[in-house]
Image 1 (cartoon, protein in one colour):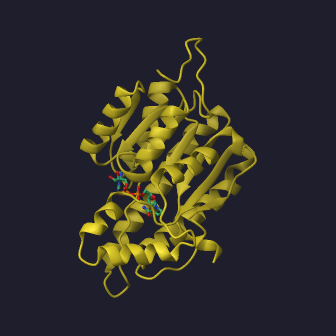
Image 2 (tube, protein in one colour):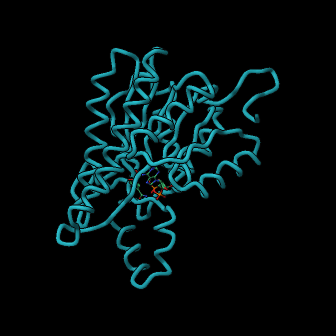
Length: 263
Ligand SMILES: NC(=O)c1ccc[n+]([C@@H]2O[C@H](COP(=O)([O-])OP(=O)(O)OC[C@H]3O[C@@H](n4cnc5c(N)ncnc54)[C@H](O)[C@@H]3O)[C@@H](O)[C@H]2O)c1
């Protein structure tokens, strides 16, 4: 692998760390997989989109980074358990979980129905709970580890049109803080990042949609920096919280938002 300098010593801030990333086929998860690979991590990449996941795995392989891929749905206990088990089976341990998989439905409460609520709570809420649960069970015997959850500005403050997604992201914030306290004395750090709007596939399509350019411009103006974020900028914050540089940080929810929450 490219993270090996030929002396047998892996280099990088995540050198040798066994990391599971959920939702690694697109967006922030994909950018995190690329950064973690360059930082020397041993990776298990998971997603429910098998085709896109295979493309990410193939691209990383082409750059000299071997990874393990697991297709599954984080809201399914069997699938979530299999994602974590793959790390232990392949590498003998788990050091880091990035609980990233999620959906982002934008609905006000008159548009949303009970099924919308259940779907986002199942994936963004229950899926994060399940992957954290199985990760902690795998980390504890090895004396510790680090979890980084994907919260959002929507998990720390109210937004319009986010009657189901916003509360699900408050679950991410709450899970982070409660698990951090529950596991601090046993060497497991649990933190979150809270991104503002990030240029993922959905946002990239906006300029081609009716009203999209105006909508995007309005979102950009809401961020004090006058722009939205890039997936790599969120990945950089996730890397920091995941690696040993953040050894005294737990229970933190780090905004990566161009100043949005400081207003
Ligand atoms: N994009 C943003 O502006 C933004 C802002 C704040 C927080 N976030 C959070 O970041 C995380 C990643 O979002 P993104 O913008 O990169 O989205 P994305 O849609 O680009 O990527 C999400 C990935 O998760 C996968 N996924 C969805 N449901 C799944 C499930 N049930 N099981 C397994 N995989 C599943 C998708 O297939 C996809 O590959 C989410 O938790 C989201 O809430 C995103």
